[in-house]
Length: 552
Image 1 (cartoon, rainbow, N blue to C red):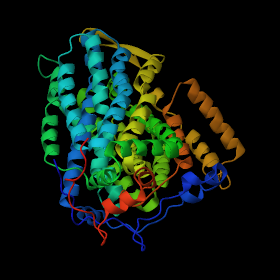
Image 2 (cartoon, rainbow, N blue to C red):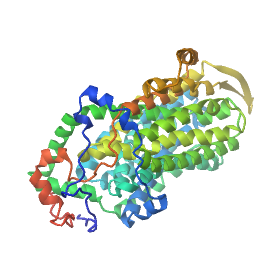
Image 3 (cartoon, helix red, strand yellow):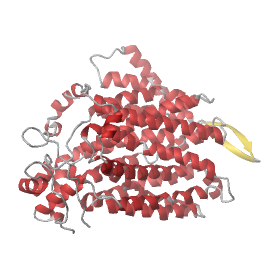
Image 4 (cartoon, helix red, strand yellow):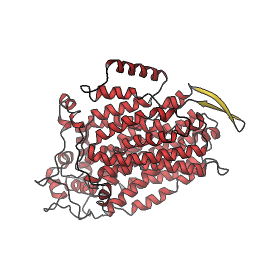
């Protein structure tokens, strides 16, 4: 089927008629690159329109693409957190421990990288639409299957397969929502898209309260309900075309020798030129995933098990926390357009580290405030990630690189909830009796938190060694705190520090062109003539349809 491109879409260019030159950080020597890390961290302070003007600059098609991607990403998070919110119910039903059930979470995280590779390559080669449809079809089947599981082994098998399906959605949603939007609106759109994750968590929390243990089927209706909305998402996506950016790239490939061969050549070029960047993105995403899963997956269990919160109190706390997450992601994503991607991530991560203690050690209802601001910071940092990954990724493999780096980071962090559950068992609390049953209790808060002084010392040493105000005794004291914290097996503070340092050392391509005019990888694979012949009319607008693109 052919699709018409937006006739009003105009590639961003410089005065000579080409898109702005790509940053050259990848071509620097190691010494020169490291020497620029501090200077490039300085906020560019670009003039940014108010958020309402930015959102008004989006076309109707931009909004429809965004909405479709946002809904799918929201439900991806909903489906993931269905297990996190009923860990205790699953453990009781299957006769297993909390640690055993968290393997269902771990398996999803582990197998998502498989789906990211398969569906990412398919989306970059054949388009965003059909891989999206297949993803959601699998969601329907496997979410229903989870709801009908009768044994622990069946549960683990369903969750492992579910991980493959879930793995393909993130990169696809990021490309669908962002790659055609105006450059000046990328930051706020990125933040809004990422908060589909928090919105999904919020919905899962609310529906779990309404569907779990309200019928004779216990936890199962939550999973049966989760299989329904993807039907609507499939219908929505089938009504939309491919993105302009993908159609333009396909036209260039068709203008070359062969679409399939050109795509393979692009892969070789991208791997040869960007292999180190791809490794960096995986390491960065490992830290981000540890940060989110480590602070969220066992948090409801901590509130009920350690602090004896009622189900209603847990629901309220989780809803407020996710409202904070949605606010933080949108605000920080928007501000990253002014202050830069790396600077925004580092500052909000420092603030998030400072809030770890009240987040994990407040046992009263006052924890609601700490939960709001902690998730504001965690998801604030995440709000920058979709556009940061998109700008860092090779254009021809945008869906693959964004999705695979994210999911391989998930793979590295896949055991976070199991690790936390295992560590928590080393810090028992007096058991309690509920409904005639003995409930074992653990100090999960000590696993989630670490004293913020460690993070600040690392920032002083790593980010600004010449201007830091930390004295040797203060750093020695921080080192003692670190030793004590590690003896308590705390991990989240170290995760924040890891994210901060890696972000500081990494590159940033804010404002990178998403089209083909300045894509050196595609030019090498398809040839400069193919780009000039297929991408632009003489006056600089793109051609109209994709009828002539080879379908292979």
